[in-house]
Image (cartoon, rainbow, N blue to C red):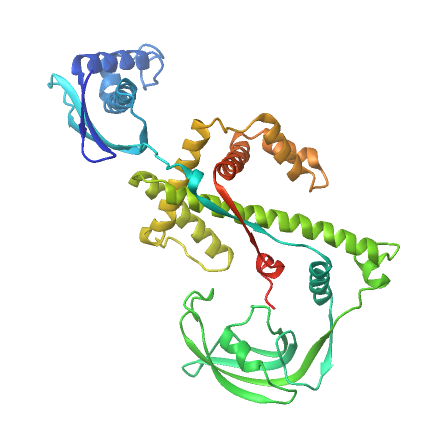
Length: 435
């Protein structure tokens, strides 16, 4: 085998490989000979089929298989000889492959992994988000729990966010009623984000016995494709407005939440514990985002287009699955790669950065770290051993845990190196609670 390498761009390479045709023909003859001993042909006993007949019937397939193997084997050896690490799949172009040719020649065009360079982050400032959790935050969480268990009673006031409205409605587009656009005695909740904005705004302020006609503009990404992007006309008649009555935080409330003795102090303590846990998780997630942004800002290198394309396809498939799960029939629709190019580039670049830092600083996950993460996940289930087995008996699932641990190790490494600036967030901001 002879090979030559050409540099096309910073990451792109073109390799030309030549293999003596005599070697290939010899391998083809050898495989046909072996096949003649096992192949079944009508009129011949097993193992007694003439080689010429086997060649006539199977020669083309055998030749194709040998050529494919030759390409894979010699390309792999050439990469190893030249110490190249390929990114993505190569584009193979066969230039000479006939039996009369002296050599079998093919070219492979591919990209290599970049040399990752990260500036010293010792002088970088990374924000460290903090949140104080006290009685006010416990009260806020209990307030949400009260709203979740509210009883709704008929009210004579005008409907507002947080209320329910019982009504009849009729909807049409260009004068034609559409499926699902009519209902009687339907109860709708205001402020939960389930209604189209125009529809919810039109109901706000109405009282029992009120009637109203109004237009509703459906968003372009509305799950019902027949209505997406269209303007509909609605008529509604309100029967009742129901306002929430919140339960008191007392012994009965505590019992309803599983505290058999009705101890409100224990309830508050349990809420505090859960809030602390959730706050810690969200702070860790935000801290990770700050670290990753800093690493991206400090790294400059080209990203292989092949890897961007693969990640873009993965994001496209993921979006299609999400749309299907929401009732949007996507079918064989192809989402343009441009939609995902920026996010795909960011993810691939970040993955290369993390891998580089982990290798250079020996931050690969240790067995006890993997065990700690798996145990934390398993303890949230009734049968923790089944969860442990689910991870440890499947290498792919365990690799997901390994990637998670590597990211945590890289975050810890960066926080040790960089300058840290504490930034206090409000509880509501961290939890995404609208006041």
